[in-house]
Amino acid sequence: MHRTIGRVSLVLSLAVAAGVVAAAPAAAAAPVKKLLVVGMDGLNWDSVVAADAPNLDALAAQGLLGRSLVQCPGVADSSSGPGWSNIATGMWPDRHGVTNNSFTGKQYGTYPDFLTRLERANPAYATYSAVDWAALHNQGTFSSAIDVRVTYDGDANGYAAQDEKITADAVSRLAAGGPDASFVYLGNTDAVAHSLGTNAAYRSAIAKQDQQFGRILAAVRARPTYAQEDWLIMVTTDHGHRVPLGGHGGCGVDERGTFLLAAGAGITAGARPIDVRQVDLAASALEHFGVAATLDGRTVRIRSTDPFDALALRTRVDETGIPSTLAGWTPAAPAGWSVDRSRMPSGGVTEWRGWSFATDEFWSRTQSSQERENALRTRGVFAVADSDEFADKSGGSSYDSTLVSPQYTVTPGTSVRLNYVTHYRQEGAQKADVLVSFNGGADQLVKRYSADARATVESLPVAVPAGATTMTVKFRYYDASNNWYWVIDDLRVA
Ligand SMILES: [Zn+2]
Image 1 (cartoon, protein in one colour):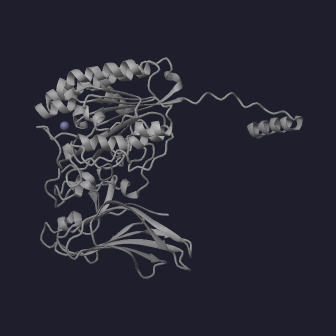
Image 2 (cartoon, protein in one colour):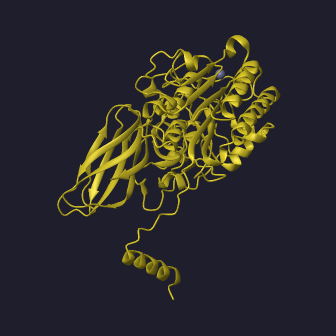
Image 3 (spheres, protein in one colour):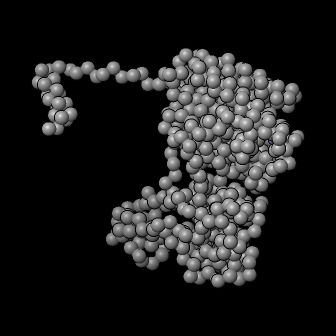
């Protein structure tokens, strides 16, 4: 007997027959969306792990932790002005315009912070920001459209004392009623690392800041209305610090290090995705409230479907200067993809003999300050053809390799788009061709790069000829000899 289905059908047909309008069961009121973002300045996650920081540890266990690296000169300093602007606006510095702590060139009118975007979407949202790096309010990183802005001056009065005032203010406002969306900034970790480095004093400052975060979190969880609320709680940092002496601004991995912690409904406990980036905080905040925005960031609730990000990675072979334990590259393409190395010489640096797949950390450690660090719109693992690094060992003089996609099914007579992220630097005679082949036929040139294309999102239209049912995409990097490089990520044919 089809018990449930049969009974439901019977009830419905009786109701219809009797002309009864069935009352829907009383729906529980949708939980009220709430957001807390705590920003901690200059915080190395490795130091959080080493410190006594039970509240941050617990949030990392309950939620998602995404570690990544920020930009550096060439594009913008690995410093607070650009970092907090990335976080607030969800855009990279080539859009929001802040390249250092002078804030010259800021484009906050075009790219406002996420609290301001919430206010514009619905002025009824109660928004709140509390900072003791006063520039974040004075420069408009968090704008005057925010309902309540509380500003203390850590530079003048000391961050340890001002962080206490920030914490007390946040606790009192969040204990009941209060804002729907909050940004609370604590700055002492950065001040301590600048003056004392990243050792014991820094870990003590982290422990103190963790207690302050714990007090804010306890106030949220003790709210009389907490059970009817849907909280997204995120913690992030603007940049890291050099280990162990402290300081930042340049292209080192430790100073570029950042993290995004996020916990709330729909976020998998203990998730450690490799595709999260600093700009994702604003996108996650806005998605929580259902506010649409076109940003570089995307919500942490959506995971990468890029097959590069699922590759098993290896440690270094010929490269030097990369820690021997860092697994960050592979020559092995994902299923359906291939790399043509038939025109590559037999010498050269093994890791870069033809197209490889690598992480930001592994690839940018090969050689600092040649803008490998600034492939900003890539995520996780990307494909890279690097004739410059290949030439660092004898026999690596000439480079010609093609990355070949899977076969995509296409409809004859239509148009498709090649959507991908690229980061390209031109030098000498090197060529970088995007080609397509229909039903295994001759390669057709879609685009040739002949000038730099930094951190670029492409969407190239391609006409599908009559009779074509499959299409393969190829990326051929050639006529290169100790020139620069080409990066491809997240190819989607639509
Ligand atoms: Zn700093």
